[in-house]
Amino acid sequence: MPEEVPEPVIQPTSETLQGWKEIASHLRVTPRTAQTWEKKFKLPIRRLGGERGPVHLRLTDLEQWTDQRTEASQKPQQREEVQIPKFTSAARPALPRWVWLVGASAGLIALVSLS
Image (cartoon, rainbow, N blue to C red; front, top):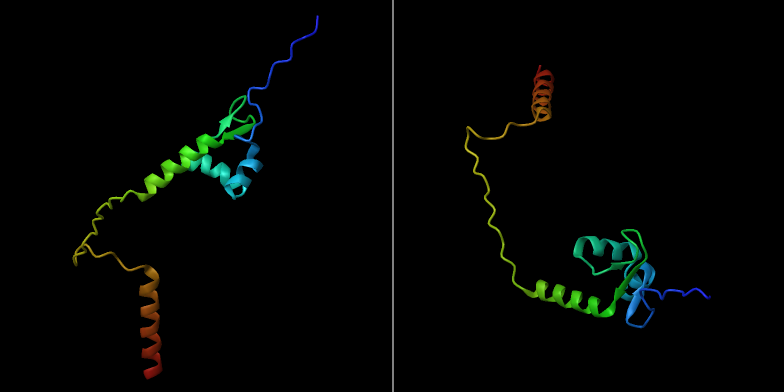
């Protein structure tokens, strides 16, 4: 009795990009950049067989991801107000030690050259 061969989960089509090189080529970036986009910007990569399995990307998912990113970038972003601390004479930061050493050395050299 012949054994049945299971069909692959992903059928290679023009609607699916297979592997990092093909995905990166479509995005016009390096494979490493595409991997960074997956982690940092949630590029909708699908994996077969777990975290380190082969990757693929459906073009429809990519279009939705691109549209969402475009919409998000066009929204006006609210800036957070940054409070800049005001220094008073009592709260003034101390000068670094090297500033004092340079000043003292310059004064000593001036004093020696006058005598």
